Image 1 (cartoon, helix red, strand yellow):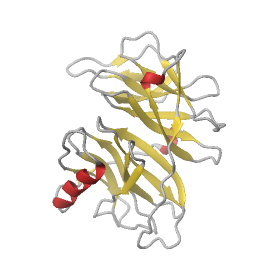
Image 2 (cartoon, helix red, strand yellow; image 1 turned 180 degrees about the vertical axis):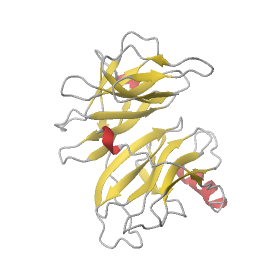
Image 3 (tube, one colour; image 1 turned 180 degrees about the horizontal axis):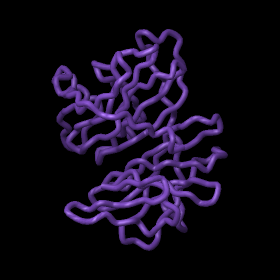
Image 4 (cartoon, one colour; image 1 turned 90 degrees about the vertical axis):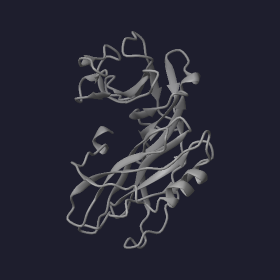
Length: 254
């Protein structure tokens, strides 16, 4: 696994000892690692906070991930990378809000990788949130089939989970069935997805307490998202499993 303490990024190998990443300098956090040992995260470069791609924990060189064309901010948060070299995350837009991006490691040139902006979701109508409008979006993970997960925030300050098909550009919205309003706000974040189709995240209940969940489904080889969702629906959400957990906020990273 990989992580960071806000000033130093690290890797904890299976069965090994904690190892600080030597590069990039000033790495604040490592957020994602794939089966090939490729690592992504965010680092400090003066007043800038771009993303980074590190081929391995022992690499002495890295690629800086830049904000998409048209974005003035240099705040880029790379959250996940799959085994095919597809990176997802979010960046700070000109409106001061987070928006999703992706990038392919095959496009690294001269030590830099330009992010590509992902269109914000057209959010659905949610019961209890009349007139809610989109505010921000964060992509937090991606599997080898190119299915990304994350969440969006709306004008009521509620948050709702989604799956995003990077091949088709289609969003599908999923909230934990146990999520409930507390002081007018409800939260579901989907923070990770495996190649086998298990998603994980957390939600908040009527008391404002956060609980983790997983949901299981079957993904066949090179699936379409609709096929996966049909499989999920077939489970009738019996795969959702709530466990007590502390809420983690990724907003502080941008």
